[in-house]
Image 1 (cartoon, rainbow, N blue to C red):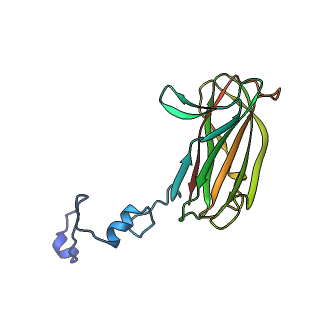
Image 2: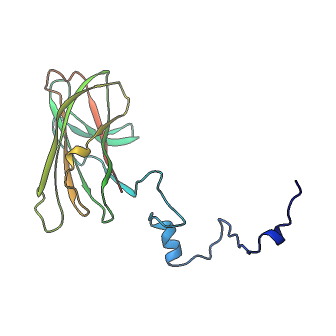
Image 3: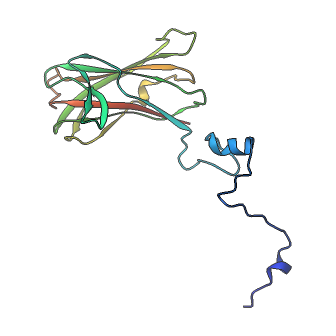
Length: 194
């Protein structure tokens, strides 16, 4: 089959801008830098608009704030016979619409069972800090030494809204007979949103 001459079969002229084109200004650049959806740029594959995270800033029980060989900070929660609680705080961004995922991230120091729970309280500016309260009941999970564990904590955030300040209390129930892990290190809580 013979090739057609493009100049006779397609009369429209096209301008192609390279990725190094810097002539965009104002709203055109804002479309590319603010993470929003546009007709030319979408994030539809992930559905995530943004994320926020926090590391423990306070502890109680036998927990201690600690550094792990300078690689990560967080909280060492309890031991095999005592409870430990790590406290974290996150402010929900103004562009928040809904939770995509909410996880507590940590790792144990032995292969064993870990018993955990989480309680939350949150409110926005002008509201009581505990306008909303929620929790996830105690659960026991099998964990592997130094393997990262992601705990789904979205169920403890019912009614969350843009601007809310969330206070988390993550408890490792080391005093419970079902908790057999020698140590647990809570690294952070991460909230991804749409």
